[in-house]
Image (cartoon, rainbow, N blue to C red; front, side, top):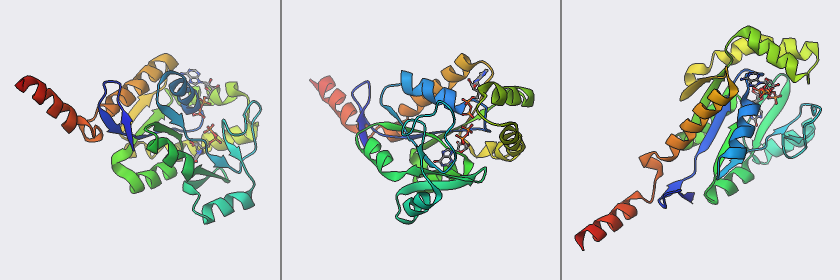
Length: 217
Ligand SMILES: Nc1nc2c(ncn2[C@@H]2O[C@H](COP(=O)(O)OP(=O)(O)O)[C@@H](O)[C@H]2O)c(=O)[nH]1
Ligand SMILES: Nc1ncnc2c1ncn2[C@@H]1O[C@H](COP(=O)(O)OP(=O)(O)O)[C@@H](O)[C@H]1O
């Protein structure tokens, strides 16, 4: 699980988690991160929920039926899973392990239940960010402007927002997504700083030894 840092010092890969009430902007911020940050790979979840217009199999989710999901869970193919809005969501284990082993960081758009499970498995390698909407009115407006869910589904998501919100204090960082470019800059700063954490930088001892050898010459 080592990556070559931009400055040549090896480090361990990390698991970068974004959670929020539905509609607060985590899909938008995730896409921006994947486009603009090198060595970051999106974890594509499996879900039993219906595909939304514009969603792509294998890019946004792996859309599976309930039986397939149960089989994946039973065979240990999922790193974590949870039930959200009556649907099942889970993280396929293999791609995460492959990415980390290849020295990449992995980005997760998962809920608080999944975040808890990842934390239990690998606390030191999990960095979690909770995204807050600026107001309830903004949240509702965003769910409507996304225009991909029925009125009934939107009501369900708004009702669930209170519950989802109650888990904010379990996260390492909190970002209010008012202006999307500002929120992106904040999330990007968190990732950049976490990549520099001493504990992750497994190559530091060797790097500093090299410096010392040069100084002794
Ligand atoms: N635990 C867990 N939660 C997931 C996973 N994939 C998606 N979710 C969460 O399920 C919730 C619903 O996702 P979705 O139906 O795409 O709606 P969204 O909230 O509008 O993006 C969100 O809170 C996601 O973060 C997963 O693999 N595991
Ligand atoms: N800062 C923002 N200001 C206004 N609209 C936003 C902002 N961030 C995201 N959106 C819009 O809000 C809707 C919901 O965002 P999305 O990223 O799908 O949220 P989530 O993945 O958390 O459910 C989308 O239509 C998105 O374009």
